[in-house]
Image 1 (spheres, one colour):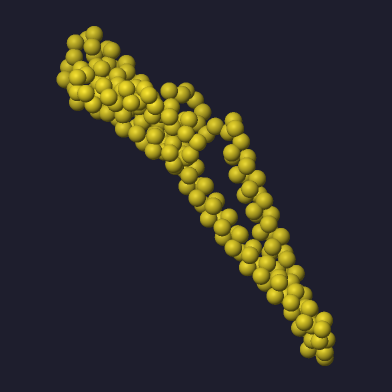
Image 2 (tube, rainbow, N blue to C red):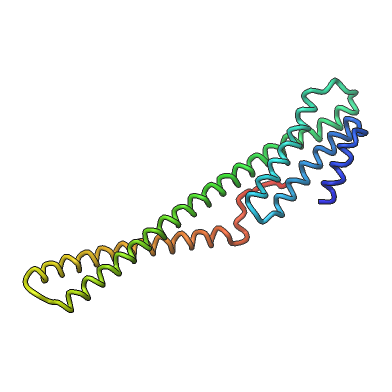
Length: 193
């Protein structure tokens, strides 16, 4: 964080030459990338990675728009620009992975909410069925009561089966989430910047 502030101060001072400006832009890209790695919140990481991309892109654009430099300066700049291009691609890939992860988390959350709501409805239905069966125990009469009881018991069995299936889905979703959150499940293999 201190490095970021120092780089931005020098960059905003308008006193840096082209080489220093590109170096600062490159270093800011790296700094925001590293801050994104330390962030524990996906949305904050996305914001930091987007900022990192802006700085790496600035280095690349400055190279594309620059005038010819002497060979010595050109070589010093082009090596950094190659690194900036590599890092730009790497950060863009990580950004996409995190965006996909966030989208999946939101979808999972919606699915869990829907399953929970369905489970609540099934539980309420089970309570109604239990109440109907209890009422029939109090007032057992005629053949109509027997056929109604069979109907209610069949509905109860279907309801209990649906509840069992939903509980299993919820358990699988929770297990998958727990597995995804365990350390060591890095989603970005390869060279880090």
